Length: 134
Image 1: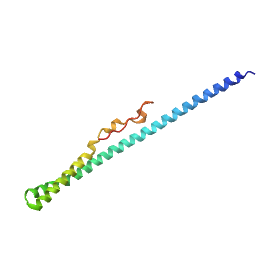
Image 2: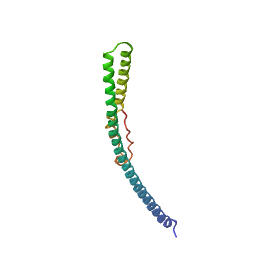
Image 3: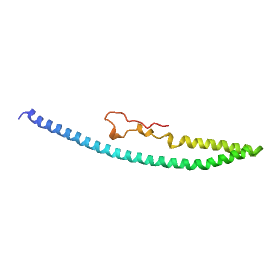
Image 4: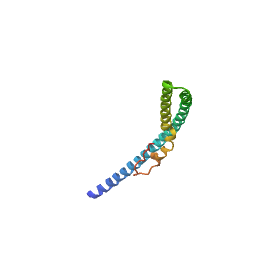
């Protein structure tokens, strides 16, 4: 019996095993990509819910802050001395607080997630996109 006649069937068997392994690997990767895509979709939905919540909280914080600012302004305009200085301090702090609420609000970040592509949308070999920050 020829040595080559023994090797050829083994080579074909090894090739078939490699093809099967690659196919199984690609099926597994596709399932993993689909699972990750589902998780990302769920995370996006949760992020939208959190942004709606943050907008509501920001609004709820701005209402009493507006009242504090208005009363402090009235006190500042109609008082003298230390009381006027205290009212001015209240106005400065409330202005900084309002700026902080506006700067950290969800409206600064809306739409930034669009730069992020789910793995199931990406082509093989591409580098992953990153989430940009405000």
